[in-house]
Amino acid sequence: MTDQLPPILGFAAFSGTGKTSLLSQLIPLLKQHGIRLGVIKHSHHDFEIDQPGKDSFKLRSAGASSVMLVSPYRRAIISEFNPPQANRLSDQLAAFPYQDLDLILVEGFRDEAIAKIELHRPSLGKPLLYPNDTHIIAIASDQSLLNTPETLVCLDLNQPQAIADFIIDYLEWSPA
Image 1 (tube, rainbow, N blue to C red):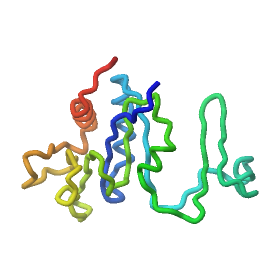
Image 2 (image 1 turned 120 degrees about the vertical axis):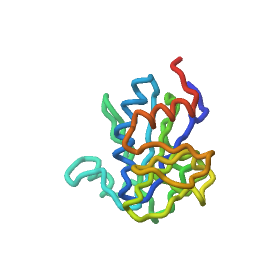
Image 3 (image 1 turned 45 degrees about the vertical axis):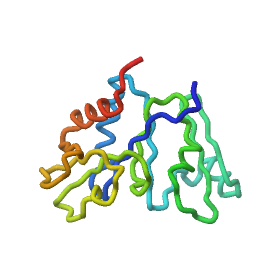
Image 4 (image 1 turned 120 degrees about the horizontal axis):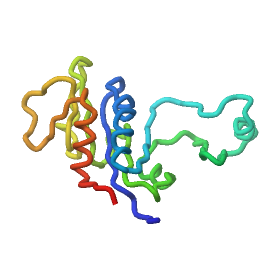
């Protein structure tokens, strides 16, 4: 077990581009290579992981600032931010159980200074992020893009295996 953070790779795009869909396809492909990975997903929306009537919901409603729900199969920690706060990736990494991971994938946190793959769908009419973000190492699009720098790897958004291969090559990861 190590206290050193594993490599972190972000996926940056505007909402509706398909970040979660792509990650759902990439995770099993990377796991086939023996890569133990975790995911941190950023949301701009309020969400409720707990449900009314459940014990953990009752405990939070009673005033607990943090509740940890534990079973033999998994653990969930629910922490209230009161008052609401800006989310910084470094704060989330500090709370994330990364010790047994080979890789952390990050969905969102588009403005953080981490290596990222940009996802882009020209049909959405949104601007490309890479011209203003030097941390983007590749762009995955559902259409060919013109005039991208030679240093920027272009990937097919509809070919998750090729994206997984790129990630493995980029990280120079090989099974232990």
